[in-house]
Image (cartoon, rainbow, N blue to C red; front, side):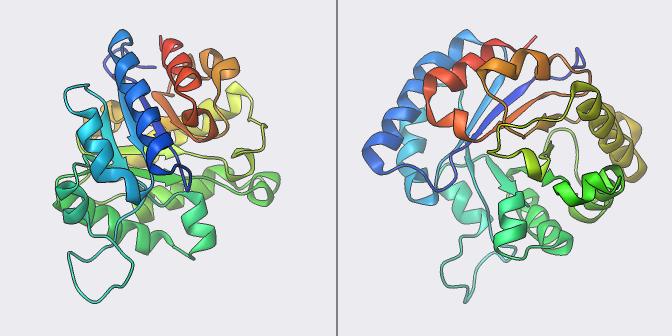
Length: 251
């Protein structure tokens, strides 16, 4: 991890959490976050965003959404715009998560449009990229993530408004993780791909998160990798104790 890059520990709660338990989790994270030298982001389901925003006030923990629509308003039943997320108290939004790409057919152009809308509304975009198991086995991992960076990261992205999360699709929720050398190779390639689109300073300063089954037991090893600047945490973010234990491993 670069000394100039503050680590980010982001929790993607996915479709988990009714009001009572979700707000209790947010309170527990808020209560413990001040002891760690990293930025925290929690991304509850949309039903909890406004209430979680009130719980997190003054804690330093950022609130993120799990998606947004590319349009600012209009006839888009069931969707939520970036401006609405800001109005609900959000500062961040996850865009292009592999589950959105797979379950909802989102391609790079869709992710780019959403990320562009997020930046225009003042949100920090957490743009996700990553290869499937078949793509990795075919030796295509680096090409796939580079193409996703090129197609999904807006041209006006900066280190201040954009974070890129690498999530090997085959590792999410599986308990499997690539080796540290494999992770570093992909993260370095992502940083190089960003440098090919933005200026070198932005690429050097942009935070790159690892998002494939990070948990307390492997966090220290993963967060020590040179180009890993934090984690996009799934299952382990649903328990405050585990989520904060991951943050404790930030160098």
